[in-house]
Image (tube, rainbow, N blue to C red; front, side, top):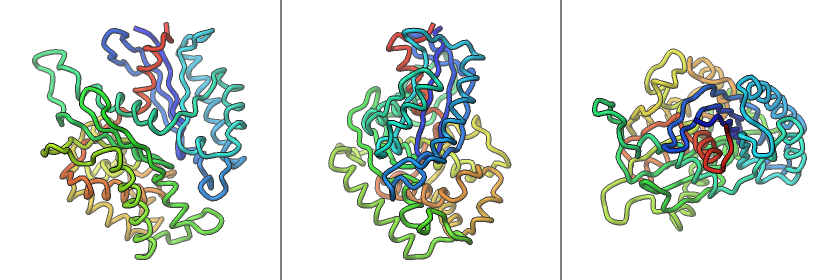
Length: 339
């Protein structure tokens, strides 16, 4: 087993995974997984720059993660076992070198500002490893969903679409995410969603139009329905999807084990999206499983998920708690990191 650490820094959150990975099978034993809402992408869509306060929130989380990595004795040296991947917000920012320099000083590694296609491939690897792997024992429980898969990773700034079975066949990233849609269509000039935070019909229509346009773009390179008939198993990743799933399961507190590989029907996603669209900020904040950092962006995130399901004809979504973080960890072992 090789001990590795993976950090995924997105538009809304930064997440850490420390794990022992079997180089032969890719099997992953999780030691620590955590998430911090930092909103790195605050106002990036409008200004094109990372805000100083957003950078400081992110660096504070990096300092915390550096201590966790040290406590777990993750190998460093010339071939460090830590891989730091940064996605949509840092791709779009003109001052991303400030971000790169700060991360390097705190964690001792160069953050990789990856492309949308690279992000999609890592998400696919992390999300489908358990779905495509053979059962380890005859009595192992069946995992919901068979290939081919359409994996959708709904982030803060972008959404990645990946089609494949045991490997990626097509991928596309588009700039439609819960934070970007919220700031573009629901926020005021200061980037704040005014109280009570209930979208107007015109705002909902504008978000829908943006999403549909992005789906048109996706379909230029990624078939959202199989050309030979049949259907994909739709696998949904990231906080918007897992929050909708937690609400659908009527959880009184967030439970990743209950959410992982839960199957949520389209009818339930539609009901929850409608509920969120007609809820005030205070009502959304009162939902037991709602992370405070998602209260103002979950409405847009649920709309993205619903729109994808309607466009693809999916009657249900398989929810995965394993995603790009797991893909990053496995890639670190493949690259020779860890010890």
